[in-house]
Image (cartoon, rainbow, N blue to C red; front, top):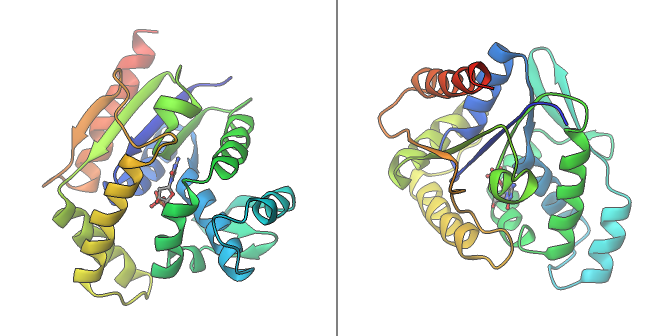
Length: 224
Ligand code: DC
């Protein structure tokens, strides 16, 4: 195993942006595990598969290929050879990803892939269960959070920049619903690992948040 930084936290807490910045500055490979759950959700939506249809999900997982590429300085997500970077951010996929992430075989399959990805490289991996379940022995564990209103506002802005027009109220409701589902599900619920460092980013800029994370990682490396 290489050096592993686990970043967990609520939806819209800044995990994605922070992970990207820190990866670049410290030369780590950024892995967005939420995008992997979103890919499975999209594939299930396209094939009209319900979360109870375990047999069909199993078959789908056997044939699914999720890849991350850096293209023109941007992270692209490919599902079975198709660029789905934008498609996996729609409200429909976002809403379906949460129940899909409660399905045992989906979690088992994706966790296995995530562990394989970090076998020989230094990574910063973001998600909900990275420090608690995927890499309980991660070198550094960070838990990010902010108020639901601030997180909804950030996603609203991010969507606008990506040409997605979803009303703020809808996003806020979605954030609150997802928080509840993600932290109350039976399998690997979103909780802070006891040894994770908690950062409340309400009122902080992305740069401030990223600098704090970089400082924590550098301290850890120094004391290793
Ligand atoms: O981080 P995100 O919003 O892109 O995640 C999409 C969904 O996947 C979200 O409902 C939580 C779930 N998820 C998870 O259960 N475990 C992870 N490691 C990452 C995401």
